[in-house]
Amino acid sequence: MSTNVHAVYFSPTGSSRAMAQEAASVLAQELGLTHAEDWDWTFPGGRAAAYSPNAGDVLVFAFPVYAGRVPQLLLEPLGRLAGQGVYVVPLAVYGNRHYDDALLEAVELLYVQQFSVLAAGAFVAEHSYTRKVGAGRPDAQDMAALAAFARKAARRIAQGPGERVHVPGNRPYKTLPPAVDIRPRTFDTCTGCGLCASVCPVGVISDAAPHLTAQGCIRCCACVKICPEEARVFDDPLVTRIVGMLETNCLTRRKPETFVVGQEQ
Ligand SMILES: Cc1cc2nc3c(=O)[nH]c(=O)nc-3n(C[C@H](O)[C@H](O)[C@H](O)COP(=O)(O)O)c2cc1C
Image 1 (cartoon, rainbow, N blue to C red):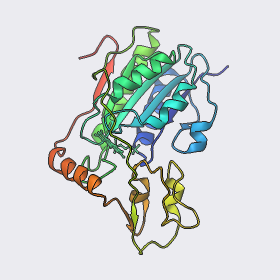
Image 2: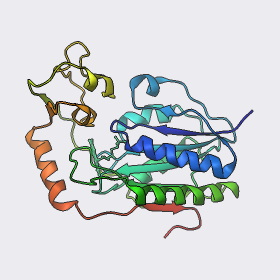
Image 3: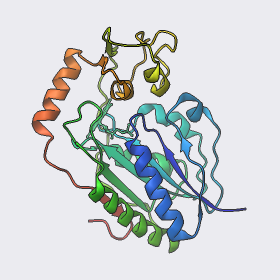
Image 4: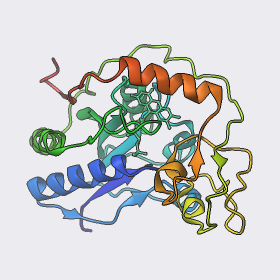
């Protein structure tokens, strides 16, 4: 049986995917494994698919930090994975505010599924809500740090099993904000091209009438960012307040943080 490295990710606006793929590529090269197909959990079909790692595989699991936590729609597909000691490298990708308890939550979720987690990292990307926060991230410096981290993770994995990596975070995890029904507004400059519907990870935008968004929007901003006419916007007062806070308090560049068993800071 061949042993593979898979990039596993949920990535509505693409930064977690880019980081998962780069880390998987470096790990495969360093460990002499095949960089095999991605397990893309961005869309409902991918999250429902039955994936099972083989002994000797290595996974990179990258996800955007949402409200300081792992996106809750990933708990179900994660809960169906049987780890059997397979190595996973979690990457919490966040928008330059903070990753709070998300990396700890990911490490603990993977541990419960019996994965072996020897290395983990938190990396910065442009914030979903505003292009001004984390602007241009991940940049060349971030990608170089990611490759260096993946090489370190590969060296540690090559040494064999060990204790679970220690990462920052608190228990109980940060309380999730109450669910609110906020959907993007669509201006009449919308041409009905349907690009927004094609990138919606929860399938709430109508293909036939893309200006209609059903209940269940997770505010990932994929539709806002992809719209060629800039016809979609979150102008709800709650989102406007969060954007104001981010653009006031979260402009100082945060650095990647990486953790490898035996080398934690
Ligand atoms: C609903 C929501 C909540 C978010 N919460 C946080 C957060 O707590 N801290 C942070 O720094 N960034 C936060 N972000 C920003 C994303 O983590 C960041 O933009 C990430 O890179 C998006 O990943 P993607 O490009 O793979 O979709 C949030 C974004 C969304 C949509």
